[in-house]
Each structure stands twice: as C-alpha cells, then as structure tokens.
Length: 406
Image 1 (cartoon, rainbow, N blue to C red):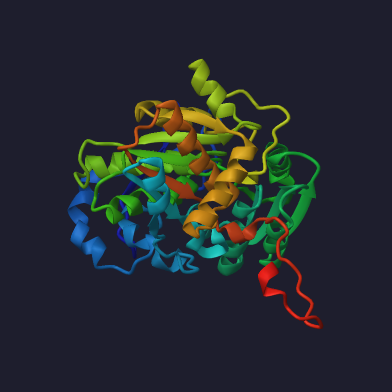
Image 2: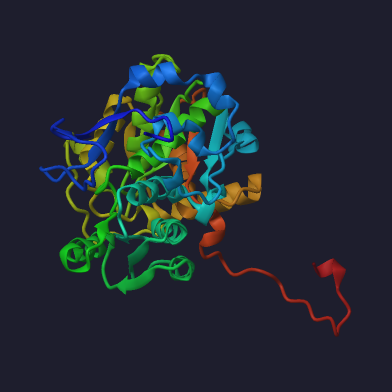
C-alpha cells in the first residue's frame, strides 16, 4: 500500500532504452549509462490537476505525483521552498533586452540547487534501505548530501578536490560527513568512491550514477513552468558540470507536454561552461555524441569544473533537441559579470550563476540570442558561500572624521 500517489512504472537506460524494475536499488545500467525514471503518465494526468498543485504548500514536494518516493515516511525534508524568479530589469533595459530572469536557487537548504537532487536521492536511498552513501564533490553537492543524510540517519563519506572552497569543506564536515581532501579533480575523487564500493559497502551517489538526482533536479523545470503560468521561457542558460539539472529540466518539459500541462513550445537549452573546462562545448561544436575528458581543468567556478560527465550524451541530446547550444566563458568575464549584477541589481550571484549572465551577454553580442527572447538564467547557489574580494576602508575613531575625504 503506497502512502504517496506515485506513478513510477520502471527505470530505463538512457542510452539503450533497456527496462529495469522499479523499487530496487540501482546504480548505472548494464552498459554503464545513467538510468531514467519512467512514469505511467496517463494515470498521473488523471490523478492530479494544475489547480490541485497550486493549492499545496509552496515546496517542490508539491509535485509528488511526478516524483518516485512511494512512502511519505521516507521523504527527507529540510524546508525545500519554491525559489523565486528575479527579473534583472535595469540590466535588461541597458542591454535593450525584453526580459532577463534569474531563478535564485540559493534560497534552498544548504544554499544551492544541489538540495533538490540530493533530497530525492537520499529519500529514495532511505526507502530502499541504504545505510551508507559516498560521493565526490566540488562543494555544494557534498554539503547537501551531508545535510540530508544526517537528517535521514545515513552515514556519509565525501571526497573533495583539495582546492575546494574552504567554506564548502567545513560545511560538509560540520553537517556530519566523513570528509576527505584529494590532490586531484572531481572525476579522480569519483574513482576513489567507485573503488571503495565493495570494501566500504557504501552506495555510490556520484552525479548520474544513481537514478533519482535527476528527478529532484526535474523539479526546477516543473516549478519554473508553474511560476510562468504553465509556459516556458524562450531560452534557458544553465551552468553545466555534470549536467543533471539540464537533463532533468528537459525531462520535466517532456513529461508536462505529454500530459498536456504545457503546449508544444520548448525553451532552447544552453549548456554554459568555463573556457578552462569545456568538454561539452567541445563535443557540441565537433558534432560528437560523447565528450572527451578535459585535461588540466581549471576555473574560478568550481561547481562547473567537471572534466568528464557520465551523462554527457544526455546533456548534448537535450541541447540539440531543444535547438540550443553549448558555450564557454572566460573566468575574467565570470568575475566581471558577478560584480556587474551585484552592483547594478543588488543580486549576489555565485560564480557559476555569474557564468550564465556572462554567457548571455556574450551570445547577445554574437547574435545567437535575440534581445526579444525571454531568457532565464540559473543562479545555482548563494554567492555568500564563495570567497569575495577584500574590501572596506579603515577609519580611526581617535581622529576626527574627514567627511570630505570619504
């Protein structure tokens, strides 16, 4: 007897389409590719309406029919609010753009959109009897895993590149994870996780190596469609490392379209990377299905420093099916974009979020984006979690203040 209305029919290999049974613990498919959760959409459509959703508490669990958790007791909550969409009105006017919107994911628990994916992954791990989880992280995903697992009573091991922002590392440890710093990149941390599965008996929660983080990130697409009156923007700029959110949103729009909640229009999906780590951009430009590992990956936007993504083909598929593209921006432009939005709009973007604004400006100038397009950018975390430039002029209270010099 289920306690929450859920309509999962099976899991499916994202590459081959092979079916796998629901309600069993799975990692990757037999071919080493991500598994996607599939639903009986006809039954789902008959069980819930837009009005019913609108009457619910403003959290992403309001979309429970679109999610896989079967028993209410296994939902792990830390206050998953619907995140606001903030218009950059002054900047849009200056650039001659009709509308630039930012979805501010920094309002979520642990201060980033990683809370969406990990809330679902941990809830499903609890439902399926997992007692120990492990992951590699550039910071925010590890913080979310630590928090939700502590809430759920699941033990965690988190492995970070040794140049991960210190505030992220401390947050992960303080929220209960066994925390390790590794002299390598995130995929090398991932190899440690994969190598310890048998001996340590942990579940590998690396990006897309379990099926449910996509379902959590899918709520971004469900939520923004509802917030825009069940319409979609013309174009979405998404900071892309592992790409779970881009894949999840594209899945959300497909499911909403199939049940008739949105029309045929789809947003163009833009995968934004840093020029110091742009494997998806290189693969997109080469017309490739998969992305080769990016050597010597470096960028100030740690969250998108992912040299190799297991879901590369799904990212590229979403970008191409939507008529979008992949683009890279320099760190100098990311830094300038962060400063520009903070000083002009009072909105402190994280570096990865600033990358989406830098990309928007770059592609507006290149002509790949039209000024009349309704653009939505993702700020994936609060800017307060990242180092900021030194600031402040000292005043000596033992001396008279020279106001004219201020």
